Image (spheres, rainbow, N blue to C red):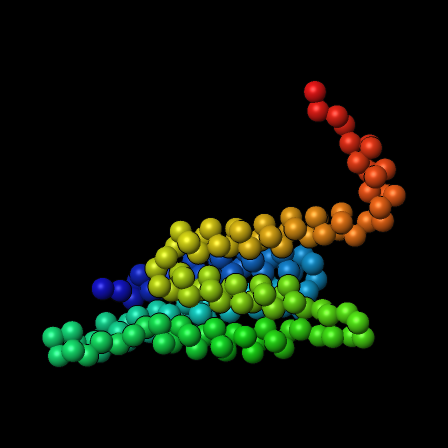
Length: 161
């Protein structure tokens, strides 16, 4: 049974994990940064905790009445999709905000996991998302460098013995 204390702990953990994800976006001066990611993760956790509490309160297995907490979870995904969609902008031949929108979507998933009590998966998911945003950006920048500059950079790397 989910206690209110455990539910409060879940909200705080979701808020902190969402903050880790939003911190990188904040450092990159993106419009949806620290606060947005924290609120999305907390909001998703609130919905999941709410659905689990409602399930416990109103399910009556002996009478064949079972409340499905995944129904609220599915609406979180839809709602956050609209929120993320608002972050995506197009200007001529360029699209901006896709990574931020994806980060908001991941923040919601992290909040849902924490709200459901799956802390380890949420923590691993947070670190994987942050690593993806930070380290893959470096790979992308390296790949965008003109070929002659890339070859010169590779030539300057120290050789392993």
